[in-house]
Length: 363
Image: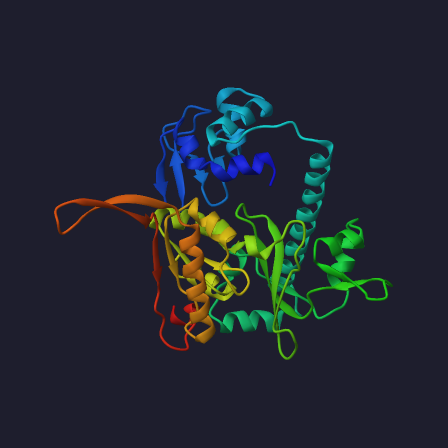
């Protein structure tokens, strides 16, 4: 994670901007009078889910927390970085050539995944071949709005559709393989698309950047579910699916609901449960829960009700207990004395689901 991303991650853009501009909640966003021009009707909007702001009035400007502070304080980027890093408690250090090259490489891989996500999403919404995929998703009860919100896509049942598309844009096949979207043939004679004939869900980091994909086969085939491999930008043990869209909901409700599958998250958000995220893989990890700790201290495990889901719930409880902060509290005794107990500074709950029903089916 770059120092810029770390600063953004630690700061709440609403809190930063509210220190300059009075804001009022308006749905999922916040509104106020634009500080950059005189106006009587609020046209300045802050979007917590994306960490951005925009003036829909005379200015027509917008950006992230850095651009706001630069404009408000009349600072250059370096000065704004110093100011916000100090506010976030991030220590700035000179970037080494190796670190600069690493960041450049990460940016390339993120760019490739973004291009792949756009390609898959366009096909799902527009191509004739994706008709079966659209029918499947409609049958699951998902609306077009939800498919757009989560950038759900379709990978055509071809060996080189994405490879040809991205190669045509100038990306080297070796870079596409490192990004996880294509696979090198065993005999090293070329490459082929990793995802074929699948509904594809774009996996994004907490700031909304596509870093990987999860694909479900349409029709017969194995594996039924296929995820991106581990890459320099994607580590499933450190990613929570849907967190980029759930951060605001978690903050407003004061709790994070953790489920197992992509479909559970899509259906939950579609029906207004905007504080739901999914663990990646078969078990909840410490790294995933540490991300949630930044937003809430109350966790609800809503994992599947089958035997495997029960075991996953128990493992999740153990992980939550190990990650949660602890506090010492005074407790009166029967003798009228006071003893001190070490307790979790967290509220961990289990959502008991009906037998044989997943969260999306319950919803």
